[in-house]
Length: 99
Ligand SMILES: N=c1c2ncn([C@@H]3O[C@H](COP(=O)(O)OP(=O)(O)OP(=O)(O)O)[C@@H](O)[C@H]3O)c2ncn1[C@@H]1O[C@H](COP(=O)(O)O)[C@@H](O)[C@H]1O
Image (tube, rainbow, N blue to C red; front, side):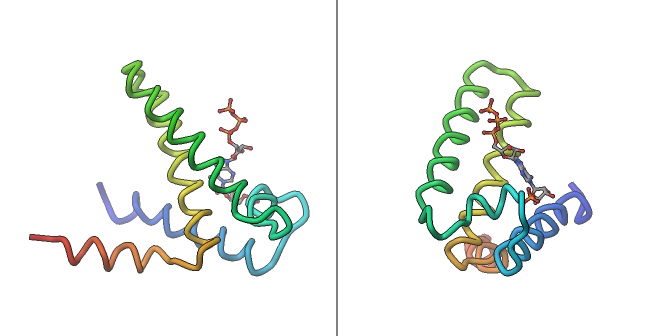
């Protein structure tokens, strides 16, 4: 995997943060981060996408695993943005675990 492949996570996270700070009409991310709905909507999606990913793995369906894992990672990024945690925070934690 190249840095360019992984940079898409940073790019999408940057868009999510921009949506958080500069709400846009019709944005899916903004609908998830809408404070009037609280954090529940984001967490429901993380749970739903986790279940769908697990079922894709159970079915041994490669295309579906890729599709659902992408959904899950995206919603995890939205969850991190909602809680004020950055990808740098996650990277720091993972680097500490290297051995
Ligand atoms: N990566 C994503 C992304 N992945 C999934 N989704 C949306 O997540 C929503 C919910 O996913 P679901 O799988 O539940 O969708 P569904 O169609 O109900 O499918 P199932 O229930 O059948 O699985 C769908 O509307 C998808 O479009 C995404 N929406 C946005 N992004 C990124 O976020 C950026 C900002 O998006 P906006 O805020 O909409 O501008 C975009 O430019 C993208 O880069």
